[in-house]
Length: 249
Length: 244
Image (cartoon, rainbow over all chains, first blue to last red; front, side, top):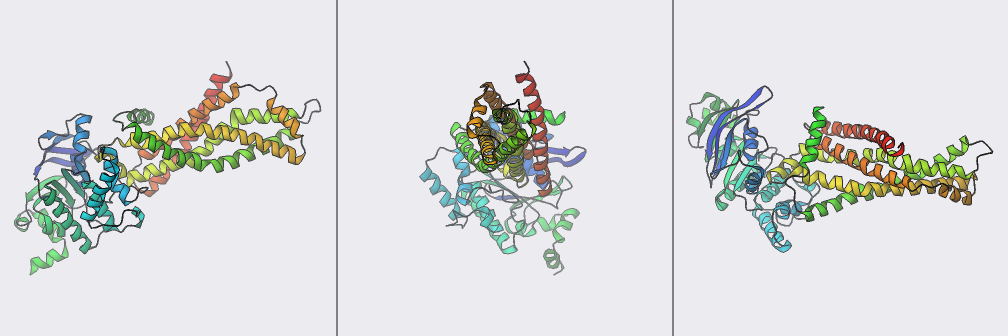
């Protein structure tokens, strides 16, 4: 479980996040949704320590990450897997080397064990026999899958996904969502997904936090999102033409 | 001033939360191949021609019958050792290797590869930059010695092929009044220049923000600022080590 308490962040004189608090549960995908520029990715980066919040803290299973010293932060970070918006695969390494990278640096496993683990993770994301391909030879969906494999190879307890569907066709996007959900349940990890894709909300939004202009306006599940009574959330949902058509019907 | 302060903090950050010696050794060897061996051809070409042209121009300027021919090769030797092999090759090194370092790190920054390392709990600056600086410190002095030798060889070829002087005179000249300290001075300069190019270029690339345009600008700034730093250091080192 990850808790965020009173996180605020501004850049120069621009306030981006205002007093965000919430709890992200273990074993199910937790979604942070909102329009572009509402501070979703900034919140995610505050949680993993890529950005230092001005106020507030992120707590990982009772461990205050934000206030920890470097050593303690490193320990927690080694339990984190993250899928970046552009996948962030290392250009100079092939698929196998990319997925093996966290094991190379963070573990003392012998090579054959590492290879077994890499092959297991690649088969888990449906990418058998792609070990020697370079990132430039992969499609967008394959890159996301490799990113997921790299994020879970170290048996991460926390999985962060920043816009996992961006740039993907709807079918591939659904497959990536399903994969994230399956992995979350299967390994009982705490997963946080930042997205503005309503398909993801409807598909895997077991817990959803809605941000608007840096404020948390709503929190709930995909089942009660249509009855939130929050005007900004309704506008966000029904900006999607499919959702709008469904509403009319 | 703020940028200089940030640069020193960046250099300091390379030595905290470090990975294992084995990791750095492997990465440093990879960088040695990338930035060292891949530069040999260009360095060989440039230094051979520098030596050859220096010989021709020195011969053109030394018209007095009272100055023996072998002085031409003595002048070429000292030019190569004291200035050309280290400073000119450092400027070329900044253009080839420095821009590549800044571009590579800048691309890693904007494509979130550096963030990926940080999230894994790895000190990205130390992991990515320290091997580049170490490899530079190892390989650039080798390149400078190689350049000096080839420059002197280029001068020999030019002298003999154009008939300016005999091979024996050239060989005598390069040994005439030879001061070992010139080699030490060239090596000291090469170590300083290697550090400046690698660290400034990495600094510029590591803190790139924006997109492809900014990566290009970071590469350009890396080369410009490395060259300025090389020239300043060149003057200061000459002042400190040659005028005592």
